[in-house]
Length: 260
Image (cartoon, rainbow, N blue to C red):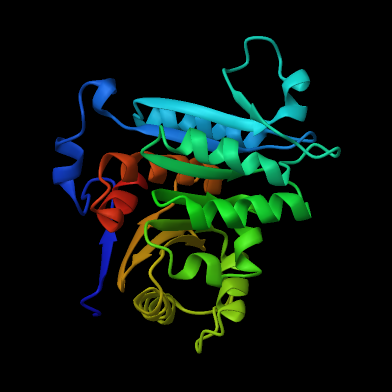
């Protein structure tokens, strides 16, 4: 059995101290900025807002493209808005708004539903370079970085919550020696995640079959997926971002505990 791998179950959390030491007062429970959405959809940032609250975050701000403002149902949730392109995605000059809001937060979640836009790609890449705090990336937001992974692979305090198909593409783009294949067995996957995160500084969270895997600096955990959680990436990313905001010095422990 590999000494860098641990299995977590609902009745046997790997890091119970984190569960017992959670902030009781919301004012001390962290601040999260959620960025996402475009004129054709904002379900991902809306879900991230809801799930971060369930996970116990102290305060959440949502930043959407300004084109979405007129589409939000009245009283849906409070949001701030940044410049958008004519097609309704984040524009290049949304960067200043992203950075200004990020200064308030203990962590930032790029929640997805961003669409495909070259200006958005520029804004996200520059944001990841200029923002130095905890950054969690999921859904189609991750695609912007998977296609050019050098931006995030060595960025400190970065977590990718990605599908196995995205992980496979990430391995190819990063020229990783071991292929992530859909038919790979359990222990080869554990070993590949160990090797990949030893070589690169990010935290990886991915799903394979009925388990969610967390890997960071060579350590790997696996937890059985809740069968009632079909939209697992945004749900999981919101919980991971919350726990990491509350435990910034323990990304592996926080991410693993968040799965519960």
